[in-house]
Every structure is written in C-alpha cells, then in structure tokens.
Length: 314
Image (cartoon, rainbow, N blue to C red; front, top):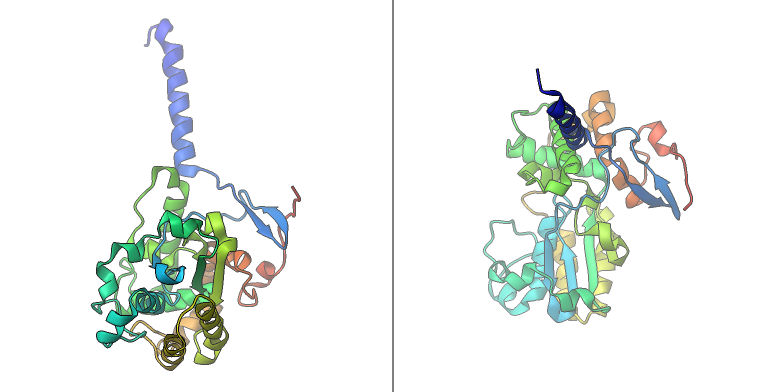
C-alpha cells in the first residue's frame, strides 16, 4: 500500500495521464466550415473526416509567368505537372519532344529543378501570382483511385478487390492523421492519394486565392475547365502557340493512369451506388469536399443532399 503522503499525488498523476491518453486517442474533431456565407459548426457531428487537415501539398511553379499550381492526386495531377513543366522551361520541354499526357516515369528537365517544386516567398506574396488546381467529384475520384491503386497496382493494403475493406482502411488511416495531426504522423502512400481535396494545397489558409478547375471523366466535361485554364495562361502572357498546345493535347489524350475507359469501372460504380457499407464510409470521408467545393450533392444519400446541420451565425 502506498504511503499516504505520496498516494494522492500518484493518483492525481495517473488521472492526468489517463485524460491525456484519452484525448490523444479519442480526441473530438472541432471544425467550422463557411457554407453559403454562414459559419457551420460541425464539431462532433457524424464522425466525419474533417476538412483542411492539410497533409498534402505538391506545388509546381512557373515563376516566369507568375503561375503556380497544386497537383491533387487522382485529380489530373499528371496533367498538372506536365503542363507546369512545359511553362517552366518551354525550350527544353519542346526539345525533349515531351507531351502533356506522359506518365510520372518520364524524364523531364523540370524534375531536377528545386525551384519548380518550391514557391518562393516573393511569388507567394506577389498579388499578380495566379494559382490553379484541378478538382474532381469526390466519389468519382474515389472510383479512379480504387481502379488504379487497388486493382491495377494492388497497393491497397491486403484488400485486393474488396471495396468495403478499401474504404474502411482509408477511413481509419485518415482518422489517425486527423486525430494526431499536432504530432505530425507521416501519411502513407494511400493516405496521400485518398485524402480529401481540402487536405491539399494549403487550402486551409488561402482557398479563396485559387482558381479551381472542375474536371470530369469524359472529354466533353473537360472543355470548360480547359478553356478557363487557357484564358488564365493568356492573361499571364503565355504565347498563343503554347496555349494551343495545352488545349489540343489536354482535350485529345489521356495518361496511362486514366481509368475512365476501364472495363471494371461499371462494376465499381455500381457498388459505389448500391453498397450501403461503402456509401457510409464514402460519406464520412468526402462529405466536406462536397460542401467546401460546392459540388453537386446528387450522388449522395438523400439526407446528405439536405442542410441537416444546425446553422450558427458568428
């Protein structure tokens, strides 16, 4: 039995330690999102993966045009890096006979240039700097992830083609990052590919500064975003020839990572529509992307198409 003079301090210390460990493991998420001009407090609601954790930031820079972009995985990231590599050094890109639909394995001149990946403070603080990023419907993006990383690369843990296993592992992995972000856990390969769109590009700090280009799976759905991008390039002084190259190659081709013509896509899309377990996890993982980026919520269950939360004005 502990002596009386040390029993109380010992018990108090154990209580403090237990409270700390509980908060570390089961810490409640606290986050507020501005939606339709109002602050919406989602603290503790439905155990969602919250927005704006910001573990992923793949920036690409063309300082000569005061342009920077962010490559969001499974959202035209290959097209993004190729386009920015072209703008970063047009001469070498053309000499190397490169194209915008090449894969990550291509040997590009920009790959050895650290300034291509790290925006300078001068560029970040310049009011004339233009930022752009391609975004994609979150559930459509998940299907692409599943087909590419799980079926093609077999990189989804030990899940194989088990989509229920995949969404559960994604959710649990992102929860670990979310709950312990102050201790900066190292995200896994799949964490970075599956993370919500809002976890990219320092969107938590400066979302309003970005031109967000919505890209669909079909070529026709790309047109408005590609023409938007072309107009950005024109305003930044990119030559007509380069702008036309971007427009033509972006509309004409696709990278080896593209999955929208996959023979297994139909089955994957069916399961995403019909499997209640898969849908429950997808809502928990990506619901905030639908709000933050104002995607059409028709693909979601009926409840999530409504504004079911309590609105609070600050």
